[in-house]
Structures are given as structure tokens and as C-alpha cells.
Length: 200
Image (cartoon, rainbow, N blue to C red; front, side):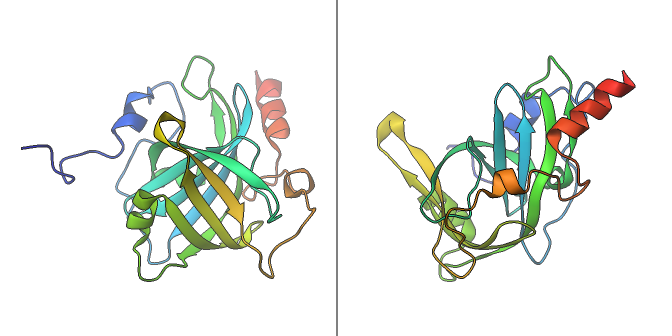
């Protein structure tokens, strides 16, 4: 018989890619899901600047890398590349991952908040598995309806991250340029990096 879902460790890839004696990233702990599910967008200045969108789904953070970052403009389609599940502990992570480690670079919490599943008849876990997620975000920067949709065929499968047309839409707005700062520290990735360099 094959391995059951209960026997699988959804954080196996996360653990395998990291040496927790060398990176400040959180070791998976016993953090329990809250009654209201959370999301986070982390701005990550690694080899290439990108944004990581993470949704609390069950006991993990389902994660997608959005190279060009999220948008509040319904006319902007954003590529979203699925990455390994992250532990719930990661939702507040900010810091600098040292050179030589996976994902080396500066990380800030660009946005965070809660979300709700707009498809009440479809559990969020199934929506992710099916490749069509409709959610309402209540973040400090991102608000309103968003969709994550898997598209393409075969090896060319990818996801799109889209803002829905609603009262929270802002056509033409560039929220990434207007609001570059962390919602936790108020610092930009450049400022966090500069502080680190000044201490060395």
C-alpha cells in the first residue's frame, strides 16, 4: 500500500532545504491554526527580488512566489509559482538569510492579515488541490477579492494571481512602489540590509 496522507510530512522539503544552525528562519514548531485563517506576503530580496504569497491552510502555509509582486489592479495578471509548504511559524518572519544558505537575502513582511474562502461549499484545501482558489483578503495593504488559478498543460502548468473587480480595486495603482515598507517594522528591504551592513 502507498504512503497515507497522514504519514506524509508536508514540511519535509522546507526542512531539507535549510540548515537551522546557519539560518534564522523558524524551525517548524507546534504553532496551532487560529480560528481565522491568516495570510502573509513577504518581500524577499534574494538573487532576484520577488514576493512570496502564503496562505494558512490546515497546519501549514501554502506558498507561491510572485516574481512581479501582487497588484490591486484587476487588469494586471501576475505569474505565481508554487513553492514548498512553510510552517505557520514563518508568518511573522523578517530578517536576513546569510549567504550560502537557501534563499539568501533580506526578507520583510510586506503585508499580512486574515482571509476567508469565497467558495463556502468547497474547503480551501480542496480549492488549492483543484487549482482554483477564490479568497477575500483583509490585509493592511491588500484588500478585497483575489483569485489563484492554475493554468497550462503538462510541464507548462503554472498559476496566476489576480485581483477581482470590486470596491477594493484600484486600476492603475502601483502599490509596490507606493508602499514598499514592512507592515511590522516600517522598514524597507534596503533599510534592513543597510542596518545589517552597518553592524558588520
